[in-house]
Amino acid sequence: MLLGGIEAGGTKFVCAVGDSAGTIMERITIPTTTPEETMPRVFAFFEKYELNAIGVGSFGPIDVNIDSPTYGSITATPKLAWRDYQIVGKLKQRLSIPIGFNTDVNAAALAEATFGAAKGLDSCLYITVGTGIGAGAVVHGKLLQGLSHPEMGHILVRRHEKDTYEGKCPYHQDCLEGLAAGPAIEARWGQKAVNLDGREDVWEMEGFYIAQALMQYILILSPKKIILGGGVMKQKHVFPIIYDHLKKLLNQYVVLPELGASIDSYIVSPELGDNAGVVGSLLLADQAIQGK
Amino acid sequence: MLLGGIEAGGTKFVCAVGDSAGTIMERITIPTTTPEETMPRVFAFFEKYELNAIGVGSFGPIDVNIDSPTYGSITATPKLAWRDYQIVGKLKQRLSIPIGFNTDVNAAALAEATFGAAKGLDSCLYITVGTGIGAGAVVHGKLLQGLSHPEMGHILVRRHEKDTYEGKCPYHQDCLEGLAAGPAIEARWGQKAVNLDGREDVWEMEGFYIAQALMQYILILSPKKIILGGGVMKQKHVFPIIYDHLKKLLNQYVVLPELGASIDSYIVSPELGDNAGVVGSLLLADQAIQGK
Image (cartoon, rainbow over all chains, first blue to last red; front, top):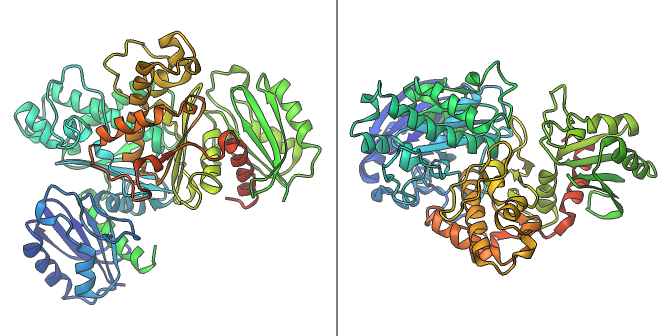
């Protein structure tokens, strides 16, 4: 089976042709501008192949409810050009093949559960901390979905006692994403996260917020593995800070984990690195063929 | 199939004999004292019947990991007489039939999803607010479980600006349960919740905490229905207060719900009332036979 995968991100579309074993034969990157500019290049890339299906892991929020009249569209995004864009409908119209559809973070969670850091587990949580914060979860071997897809980046956190920054989320101001995503770090400290490497105060605060989020995710979902990805989490020195805060917060109420010798092996970096999203999209394509 | 169900609660065991349609033929209530006192009465009740299986919905935390050497036991409970008690092992030894095992709140969630307020849905969340706060969830038609069962009652919340009460949770002090369960209400206001009926300040604060919890649950799990049970939630006048806070908190970021005309029909009381736990235990028995 020849599959297509689209990691439809807010700044770029990564398109790949590959298979359900996660092998990528060809890939291109296309800037995310408007549907009128971006999508013709997407079509042109895929039309060179005889594909059996395409999977889309998209920035959100998106409509993943198969019974909804707007299924397959990007919904309340602040990127106005893409609001209500029927990405699944347009792909289907053009290529007449099954189209899988989910969030970019759910695609990455699926890829890490299938080939990566949570391989062999029927449960994991993938979190990305970058220009936004999002998470996808695999529960009983399937992507978590209910009324809609999760929006875990917007959970409430308690403020750090030294944090006077008001928060950047247009909906909730000082939710997790509003206080701990890359743009919030930059607005609070006056520099991009990548340039704040040696600043202990920066990462102590960041670790405090991420640990609070992990506590909520653990108490609510009890994932078997937590994978922390995204640009901000490339600063590996923040991991031990997160562990310390998390241990204090949970206070031994939950035993973490029987899965490994230490908490360090419960919370890990993505094994697929920046490929998680696009490999996950290939898996969404495979699921679309199987009618999952 | 004749099934047994045990709702093993912290103050009483409700034992029932019935079937997988949720019909109860006989039930008794036994006080939860020590295993030495309580369990012989449980055995005596069930030994009158030729049962095919028994399901146990237990107070927690419990070990639900089938691969664990301590599977089927009650673990870090503050009820010392029951700590490390192998309830599944003892029942199996005595009755030699399949034993289903999960938390009391998961049992209730399963019952409400099968026969109650979430009937026909493959996803729901059941929350009880009483002497403690706990929740169980059905995801893709199955009880949510990962590393262990969820412990949703202990999530962090932001303090109400007028709340000076320090919190009652022995692990986390001012987590949700520490601030909003029945004993916290009583300690803060000097009277049991049931006697604080007309006190606007009491229920405004309670609604504020429960709404925060619902926001976190919705953003992380996206349940198709939320069922709010337990003693404290019998005060129905708190529901509109919860809705108001929740709407403000979510700020239209998540559309709730396409399931009904209003948010009121998304968050409901249990349809099975106080029977949810024991009916769910019968369903756990049925699942044990089917090897689920």
